[in-house]
Length: 426
Image (cartoon, rainbow, N blue to C red; front, side, top):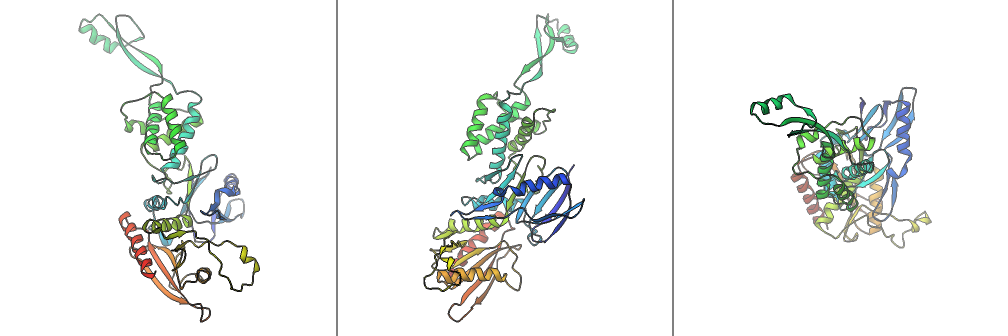
């Protein structure tokens, strides 16, 4: 039984009791840099690791600062639950699912971590697509070793004595003066509950998956498995398998989730199966950008910033840089938007964020810049303040707090209100 440890992004250094074995496994994950590399639509790369400043204090404790992720990492002795910041305490699995689905087609990155590292994108079915992918991989590996077969009891009423005599059923035949034997015997068959569970999981994937490779594997397995007519999901979900091959055990556990159409919760109900983390920065940016583009295709996500001729800069190498504001409208003719998964206090945004947006605005030649950040409230929170470093470059800065913890209807209404607010500024 793993010890559950909760960590929270934005709360600085965490001190965790961790074995050497778990430390080694965690460092192996962190060393695989491709897991933590974000790639923008225009090819820009940035690395945001799961943990920062990971060090061992002594024989018992390690310290680290968590990165901008929510999710579960199940190690040998501990389970690390990466939670949203406490100031977003209302954020739960339902909100994450909604944002993941709505962020498609910009495809925010998720990272799943089974035995081998892979990267999966989210389909319109939320987090089900990575689950489908893992299931067909494990089930296919198990089936390559042969269809699972087992002994089942077969009842026989025959004029010949075949198998083991069933005295209770035989007594009924004798009373009715029927000249037959009531027997039972063990028959080796592939029509059993394990293959039935795999069969129905493949049928679910065949219907719901949007990944052509995943569907092709499921259809290939359906041609090999025996077919079944009507599922008894109640029985199948409670199926327990005696110790068998590793791939088959995983396939059975994953198939239970598939037929139940459950996906992985960042609260970790399925921590013994695999782990998944979601980059909150990436998710929030893609969610807002995708929603605005769905309202108006004049919005551009990750627009490449053109440098304005004639601006004197100290670093002559800036001419070769590529800079990508999160979101602009009409190729940056009206305003520039930056999405920040941060809490904006009464004193305003971080000065570094102000410098960044002011730079974007001056380069684009606009006088409006908006920071969109999440809030744990039912209503948008809007603040405005002018920024001017000299009389010729005054920029009106807006902080728009977008509600992300309501019902799906409320979240949809919140993004509609953000769009209407932006259009009023254009």
